[in-house]
Length: 332
Image 1 (spheres, one colour):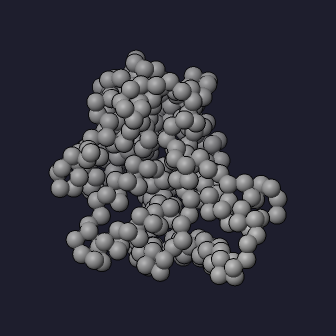
Image 2 (cartoon, one colour):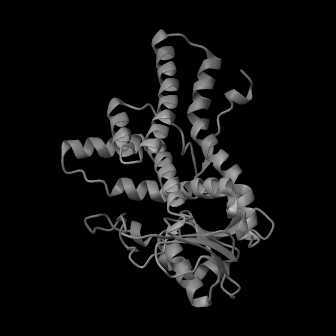
Image 3 (cartoon, helix red, strand yellow):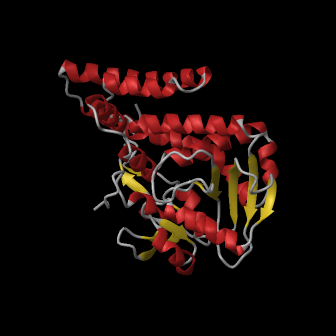
């Protein structure tokens, strides 16, 4: 067992730090809104991250049943893949339980299990990021034909799906709206919270496969922004900008136009609607302002830009859908 196997990754970014550096003018420093609503200028390492955000938990039998219940709604092939990942995690959990029950105390074993809990899911996300890196670089350079490569499209759609589901805003929003009127609903909601690290990854896989499967029906477009207003991004980097989406409630929309800003100048959108044509689309200033507004409204705390001027006009929209409870009361 190497020292690397025993090294636990503590700081987990739920938005990829390297992605954010496109707003850094060649540096790692970006402008962003803070928890108190101010605008700061600091390293991407300082934001959209929590300690142990992807740390795995011990799954109870109820947790496993909730996971399987969600997974069964997927196509058979994907359900089997979900279960294969789940079984891998459960084998490690079982091994850890055997160790605990043995009463043995071994420092190296303790370090290994802790590192495994901290690193497994983080490493999975890192692998998706690595595979998407050449695709994002090409798209930022307006080379849309990179997605003519079958493997690149598969990897980009899987990455894209996880950019929706892996974030703190997505987690907190979805768990917050779970019904808790009966004992069973409370148990399911609690299991979702405990098993979210796995459920979020499973959701990302499902979204990615769905986007790949419908790639010929949806409109995939590269948005080129040569206006004086740059694109911004946020702690929820992929947002649904379809007109049916509520900006004040966290509810499932009927349709999706998924917008992903890649840089201050380039965005990528996957549309159910007819708004953009497949391929390269130049956007006007009004469209950029509209998209930035929706990015801010669906963020929780951080919007990120390449200058203070770029994000200041959109501060007032931050977190609109997180400011009230399902009953309509303001969140303190």
